[in-house]
Length: 114
Image (cartoon, rainbow, N blue to C red; front, side, top):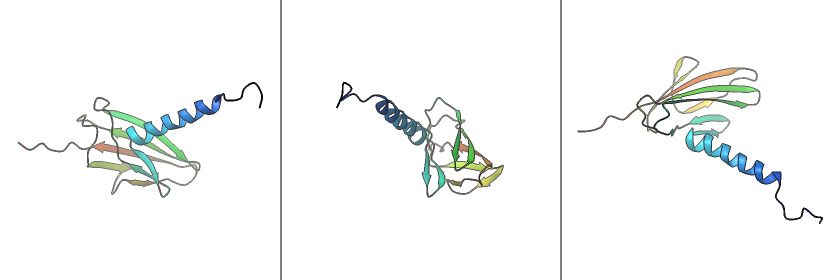
């Protein structure tokens, strides 16, 4: 087996890095792939207010801006615009290869009942 038997080496580092990336993208930003589309369900730390990310796939990109002006972090309701127009639902299709889609997600604060 040799003198390095039992040492994890770089495979441990890269594996941990992938899980950390997944935690950030899926757990915090709320970005997951579903049937080749980007599904958006943000759950930001309440003091962030805004974050930006670029997600690339098959030569295409989605430039994403998540706004949380009321610092609620997560809400059942969001407003989504895609390339400047209102978008229904939370799944966003990737554009053709070489193209960029610009998406803005605004987290909506639920009104509090008195």
